[in-house]
Length: 100
Image (cartoon, rainbow, N blue to C red; front, side, top):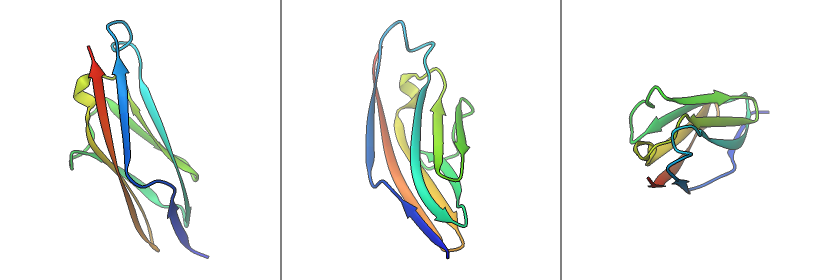
């Protein structure tokens, strides 16, 4: 049986920074999905390839995005695309970063 399900629709996150944490903390988001065969996850930011300081990971159950040393420049419109031979699922994710 082949399938592809993504458990989210439009997502908006707001990250609050303060003077002490913004230079040392990372922000991690996990997104669950179901797909057989396992889909390949592809992430973009504002329609482009992710910056080098952002890592992504994928397992059979979820895809993860990690923003290392989160700063205001990490704000933007992200998208994760899951693709297998059944089809494609895309989810837009808006990340807002506020604070100093």
